[in-house]
Every structure is written in C-alpha cells, then in structure tokens.
Length: 321
Image 1 (tube, rainbow, N blue to C red):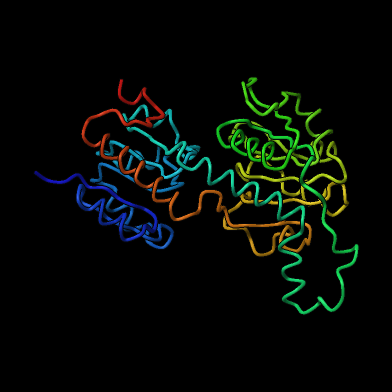
Image 2: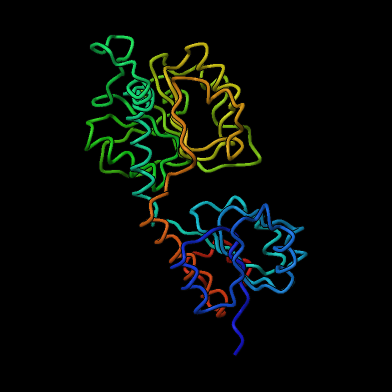
C-alpha cells in the first residue's frame, strides 16, 4: 500500500522526521522561502501538510487538489482560511494545551526581565560598566504584590495568573469575551479599567484580522506611567508605532515583546533601539520538550486525518460534513 504524500514545510529535528517517515512519504522542506518553487511542485499531489504558519488560502488550495489535511504545530490557526478550507473539504488542526505551561513560564520571565531590567543590566556588566555599586539609575521595579492585568483569559492567560497570584502575591485583573471561574481571585473588568489600574498589562488575546489592533495610541495613553506592557499574543494585536511613541514619551515604563507586526523583526525597527524594551524572537513555547509534544500531537492529528478519522484537534468540522 502506498504511503500518503506529506510535506513538512519547516525544519524539524531528526527524531521527528524519522517518525513521520514511518507513516508517510515525506517531503521535508526546511526553508520554505528559499524552496517555494519546490514546495509548489510537490503540493500538486500531496495529501497532507505539517508545519507552522503557512497561509492556507484559496490560491494555495487551488494548487493542491488532493490535499486532505493541514496540521499546524501551534495552538493558533489564524493562518487558515477556514471558509475556503471547508469549500475544498480540507481539515485543519492545531496543538492546544501542550504548550500552556511552557508559554506561561515565558510570559512570567518577560515580566521579570522587564521589571528588573535583566537584559539591560546583563549588557551593563558585560560592557565593563560595573565599576562601583549600582546606583538608582540602574534600579528596577518590584513584581511581587503588584497588580497584573491580563487581556485574554484563555488557557495560557489563566496559567500566567496562577503563577503570578500564588508565586508573587499579585492581584489579578482580567478582560475577556466572557467571565471565567478561577481559583486565584481574578477580577473581571472593562478594558479601560484594566489599563488604568494595572502595574503590568499582559496581552494574550487571539488575533482578529477584521478589527483594529487591541492596543493602540488610546490604550497606551490609559496605562500608568509606571506600568509595563507585555505581548505574548500576536504582533498584529499591537500598533507598534503607537507603542514606540508611548515608550519614547515615557507614557509607560517599559515593554517586553515575544511577537511583532513583522517577523523576523526588521533590523531598523525602533523597538530595537530602546533600552526599556525586552525583545525575544517568538519563543513562548520554544523548549525542546514542549516542541516535541507539539510535534507528536500534530503528527497524531495528521495521521488521523489521512486515515479517514476525525482528528482530535480538528478546528473546522464543517470540512468533513
């Protein structure tokens, strides 16, 4: 029996490649941008795709008449045009839950790094500027017993709230589409109240391409001058020009960013020039253990779909109706 043809369109560890090859005829394209022509040629008779972030549009689907399933190695699936996928009976899957704790750890790391100015002071030491006792100009701000406002209280937001409340005695405010039961005393409030009252504002809401950014000039102006903004959601949720303006005008104290409007970030982006901005390259779930868990779940989804089963993490049931 012939194995179904699948394209993995990003670099994967050898152990993951070998696991896939046991079940499918694998075409492994490590750099999609460089090998896009090869990708399109192989796409013509492929039944499955696995990777992270590929826009699955009407144009792509027209060039993939045999495609049955696209398996995202991510919790997000805003790269899917679900209406078009449903028209072509192409299933889409994601990998929720397995990255929740790891991403929550990363968000707390960003809170601490920005508050205690860890990257800046690391460079201070390595640049041999530590020649006497640290003065007030190098002081950071406390995290414990402060107020954390979370925009988007999904699984990851709740996991951050748990760490912040029980680990740092922080008071938790949150703004969400609906109120959520919780075990850490988090208070539901309007976005305006959250921005005005929080010492730390963490954005964890999903992206919505049909609405303006959640955080723009108005929202940054509502925050405390002593507040820190953290984005662990999507770059398009933030008006970067408004954020830069706010930081340069000292409207807010600092920012810590795992995501950006354009990734990789452009080298001339002003965010890279500001001392009070912590930048990391979209590493919320980037530990080896978690990425392997994500791959294992993505492969399970992929194989279920190829074997005419409903994948455990199918996001568009309409595709199989």
